[in-house]
Image 1 (cartoon, rainbow, N blue to C red):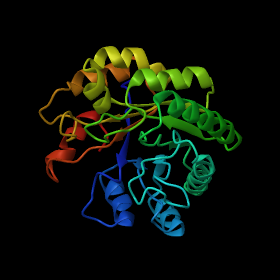
Image 2 (cartoon, one colour):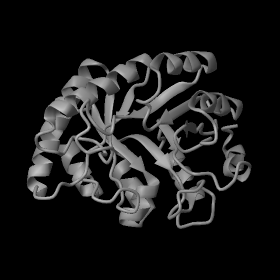
Image 3 (cartoon, rainbow, N blue to C red):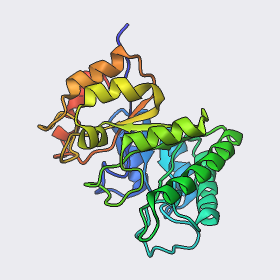
Amino acid sequence: MPFIYKFAANLSTLFDEDDFSERFRRAKQLGFQAVEAQNLYHLNLDDLKAVKKETGLEVALINSPKSGTVDYFEGQGFGLACIPGQEVEFNKSLLKAIKYAHSLECKRIHILAGLKQDGICEEDLFRTYKQNMEAAADCLEEHNIVGLIEPICPQVKELYFLDNFDKAMNAISEIGSSHLQLLLDVYHLQMLEGDVEKGIKKYLKYAGHVQISQAPGREEPFYPGKIDYEKILEMLADMQYDGHIGLEYNPSDPENGFKWLESYRAV
């Protein structure tokens, strides 16, 4: 029996010429059964629930908010988990994410770590991050939701706290909760470590979600670039990865950006 890939269209990077509800419909028209999204919190939750019901699409993953109820970073925040003094706002942001996840029947939340702060050392940032993520894991367990953490390269987000895989794996190991897992983005793996095949063998068993795009430009996987996605997708099949694969990329053009999916029976 052939391996079945569970691709999830990222509605925040694909179909960006459409309003958000129409992006659900575009994904459905292309044959997707699941979607994921980054920042949803400016959107009406009832509208999102309605278009999810209309299309029947599964929401595989959403991000946590970039800030709390009080935006102390004037729109420049990228999560709060690592920042001393923001524990209350972090908790409020987590509860907001859980509310959206429940409403959309989503079982995974990518929890943004936050940016490094002037005058705060790495040890204090990690201590705060670990404490917040321990509390988050307990809260997520109560709600039957998995929290995901993702190393992000500086080319995408300068000063992001979770800027390498060792730091993410240390947090996962020290916290030791089944409700805290790795978001394994193959693009970031390439940009941070280079050897993606070695990295997948090392990290996939800790991953609750995988994302793909070509490096260095974040186009569709089979656009010319550094990553051999024929090998990578074959590896995921051989290793029997049964989670979703998020398509977090910027299509090179409206047609060729999705044509590769025909070979993997996604459309």
